[in-house]
Image (cartoon, rainbow, N blue to C red; front, top):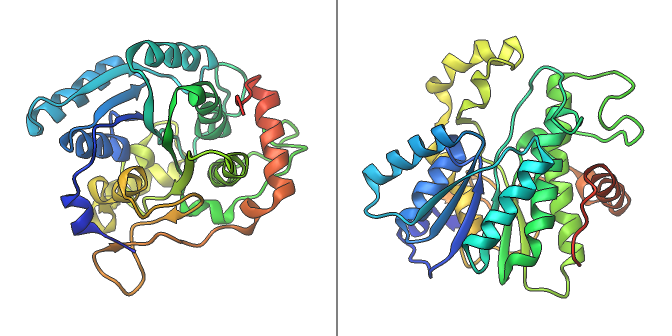
Length: 301
């Protein structure tokens, strides 16, 4: 368990932290929190205009934050490569990489590289980013992959991974992409056994973010969006598992952090329930191979 109060009162050493999708929702709240702790936060954003607007909001609450805003479109391997090149020129190393950006239950479509959009942005884009940034991570870096409890309903059909043969359903594809996040975490940690770098997965629970209100989202979620404020926790609370995974000293590889420790109010859980498919070695190997083949990117391991 991690005490929320203790997390908020933590002091952290100087760190460089990269956050994808940092202009809104969980990513924005994590960026603001970590900037207030003195970290150098690099905000990866699809729109520089919205990124600068988010930075302005952080500057209203945090005195002289050390925050950089860089363009990053996870639907484009070319954009990912350019982002990584800029990060490498900007900082000596990265201490924490938070793979946060994502879309949820959207209508079927393709990324710029022809990937099914949810798998492409939620998993393949982050796979490529992590691989290309890997040799610039510090010796004890953390990689934080933001998944969802929806991964529990996910499954893989590696003969129809991107619904090339039909059968696309928005939430089914979302659940698969979130299962990919946590499967990727466990596969990566297996390859990191001789290193001090750790990968951790988190989920925010039901938090009020922009995921539900996207114009390209399915009608049920767009209809549901106005009701979120009635029972969903604010994004600032939904971001706490991500923040804890990034900086709390008790966190270790393969933990799955969530917003509530059952029966312990004011604490985060460090070992939430995981879909057994994510722990299957053959599934991990198949996803890793598919990810390398599709992106054309390999890890320098």
